[in-house]
Every structure is written in structure tokens, then in C-alpha cells.
Image 1: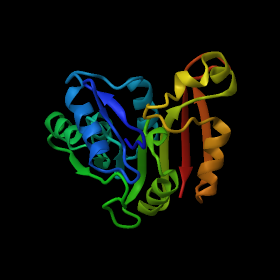
Image 2: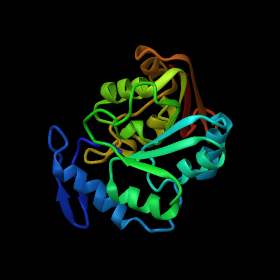
Image 3: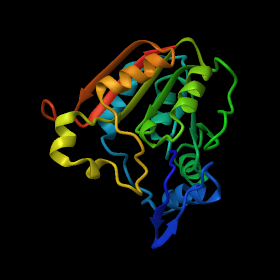
Length: 221
């Protein structure tokens, strides 16, 4: 996860610096240290279904923003050569404890991903892009590490007009929160197209018509 704002953790305000200095790293480290060990990611089974529909045996697959590594492990069980990556060492410690046979890597907040060009056939990034401050750099790095013809699969909260109008923008974008961007089907489709991805598909799922809560996007490098 990436963030440009400060946040209160355990009663202490943690400010963010312009280029993600030590305090914001502390924020995510402390966040993962404080989360219950048995916490299941929100909508886990639904998101897992989307992932397993896309992953292929033999895929070189990256779970970018892997957290506790449950999706990474699912890709490995499906026959992929899977690697999980996150910005918080505390998250990776939890992932390695839960899934000792799976490889996990620490990645920087504001630097290039530590992988060669064209390293992966699939990049899965679920509930991450809304936390990314420098979206342009992040997507450029995602595209760089994908092989030609490689697939991007991501999920992010859906913020269609009706949902935002009924709930109010404050509900979805707190001034000191870590959801930095609100995406609609159109804005996410346009964004991926602008960064050179093809065959872009964005679906709104989960919830009644006009009030869907999640976007599922696929694209090809």
C-alpha cells in the first residue's frame, strides 16, 4: 500500500513526507503489526474467484501489495510461479509465517520495482491502486515488469456517481485517510489505456445496480 497523508496510529499522529520518508513506512509497519493474526481480507472469496479465473499453470505471477500473502499462496497452489511483494516488512513477516514455501519480496514506496523487465506473465494487485500516490510511476513499473502479452488484473473500490452522491465524498475519501483516489469504470478504463495497456475491461460488481462496490479490471501489455 502507498499513501501521501499522515494518519493517527495508536493515538500518535504519523505525518507523511513529500517523498515518503520514514514516518509513512512506520505507519504501514505499525498497521500490520496491530492487525489481528486471523484477519481475513475483505471480500476474500469473491476476489479469489476473480484471480483463479485468470491465473494459468506455469504463469510467472506477481501479487503486488500482497499483505499476508493469501492470494500469492493461492496462485502458487494453482500452478503459478508466484511471488508476493509489499512495502511493509511486517506484512511480509506474516506472509512468510503463513506461507513458508512461497517467495515474498520487500518493494520500495517510491522507487522502481526490484524485478527485471518482462519478468511476469500476470500481475495481480487487489485493493492497492487506490492507495498509490504516484499512480503514473506505479503503472509504468507494472507495465515494465510484465512480459509482452502479459496480463494485469486488479480490483479497487467502485465510486460511481450514485454511490458517491448517496454516501457523500467524505465517506470514501477522508482528508487524512489512505484512499487517495476514487475510481469509476470510465476513469479506470481511461487510465489503463493512457498507459499503453490494451484489451482493457472494467466491470463493476458486488451490490445493486448503480451502487456496485468493487471494480474488476483486466488489461494486456
